[in-house]
Image (tube, rainbow, N blue to C red; front, side, top):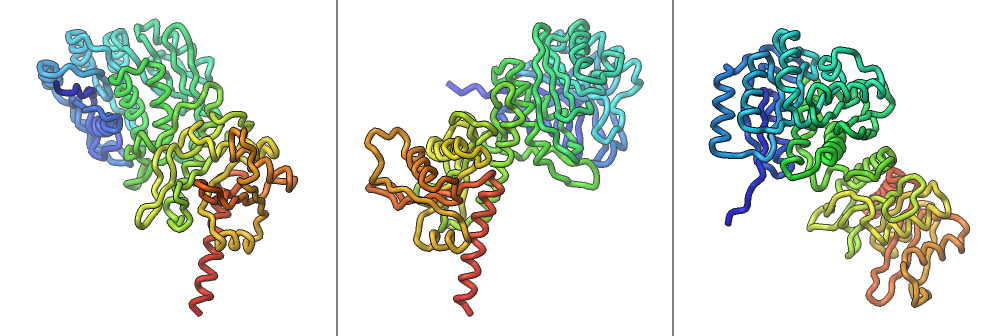
Length: 465
């Protein structure tokens, strides 16, 4: 029996710059390992700077596209994007009803470059509210889009909640209002199922215009719902994934940044943080991921022990392993370079996390640690760099010790009375000797590694003279 491949359909406009529209939707579906289907509603002539022209597809052609897909395939989820005018909305709404579709609706009104993506705003909004909103399973609106649909200006989070209620009254089952346009320090995405309001807090990313972010989050939500995620769970995951795509956005032209749809979902996007701790967790995850990327691009494989490298970073006021991010796997060596195996996740490293927890209990400002290979040469480099150094002897470890790293770190801290830059041990039978580097944060730890590399390079140059 053939394995059923999940499918998702996007009914939207075409963007030749491929940052938004059906092109972005297809990329988002592919990242989730979903087969994407498309119905084109209009062809735009645009780039990263402006929308030059819009050519609508005749309503009958749109209907024929939808019918032909449903004759052969039953999509697991369907989203709508750019619908452009009254006739297009009516055609799509008719087919949604006919094929019993529960659509995720992205009410696109303007492009990132602030060009209108509709014809005759009054009839467009009116028709949208009367024919499509009552059939909408989940609406994904930004603040200007929500303003247009409710008919008044949203100024704060209280207004967002009020707008959610208004949209429910218009027939929408689930509402997401994205808060990037509000003048708040954080970005708040607000989700409502008509019974309860949920707020997702995200650190604001400065200097990013993020062409395609609205299409992408809506497509990710659609894909996750196709994978049987519940609406709020889909919204949460899509919010964090899109946040990292915006952060890692790039510029392909002279205009708006393009959202980064080249990420590896299973490796490069943040996990959903615990409730009420999203900012601490996202910032910790971001800093550690950036450090891991720097390490894999600059660290010689000679620094990698047989067991590999792990680097961990604790959230502020960390208490348990679940408050510490690390590589879920290790940084290992190939023939010529380090590679990271696994994503950055919390609660996934007992060894490095035990060192960090012991250190933070002694000094809450020291929240990061990583291991490198032990050698007399590396130890001498640490001394030459002026690093403070502590050591413990595995042979003295009590037989009932539950965590060698916790015990060893505690021995060093009690002996020295402070947290050193380096903690090492020379191993034991079946236990590889190791050097651990400790610091306030990943930038601090990576700087210490680079200091060792500079000293090694300097020594090598002196030997060549």
